[in-house]
Figure (tube, rainbow, N blue to C red):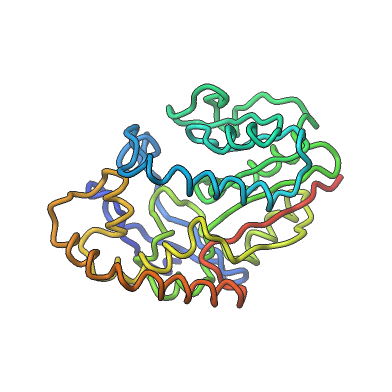
Length: 287
């Protein structure tokens, strides 16, 4: 049964309906995503605006992700959904034996262009696997997790990052919450939902992190601002070259900029209360 209708940030696409589980609260996007959606629009091949200026911050996010994983240097690491390979390069710079897989055309160098469903990787080959904002893009994340389970050695470690539908910013943003991103996001997890899925896929959740600088403060700011702009998540899409620079939304966004520190403090409080906009879960392979 439909629970909510959410607009797509891609102008050529209509709104999508979401259905929600009465038990864990996780939701699913109804209807199929168009082919090549992960290679166009906000996911197009061009580098985002201000990309070079953002690189030091992005590399700091990578180092924090490695700290969350808490695997020893030299560990054999697989990054699932590795994109252009930035995190793989950061892991290699930190002395990890890192490799990535990525289904889109962005894959290159240390990243093999192959989906998690089709990857031919040996069983027990990796000490650690990261799937950072990947599971929400899959129609069957459980099947993907079972494949990752087979690729990990016994007691290997998995780190997943997903948006949190039970977060404060999801309530604030409503149908224009920054992390809905329909129809690319197929599954909209709650903490209960992702932990149940991990257990069903052969993992033991060890710890969940709600205070994350990589996505959460921006999401808390962008979500209410998106309620005022015509184009959903306008600043994000502007940086991704997927929204027009000449738009009334630019003035609205500029006027809202001074509220960014307030949003960051609000998100910090939400994270400390266990309701962060995205969560990172560390789990151990069982069996």
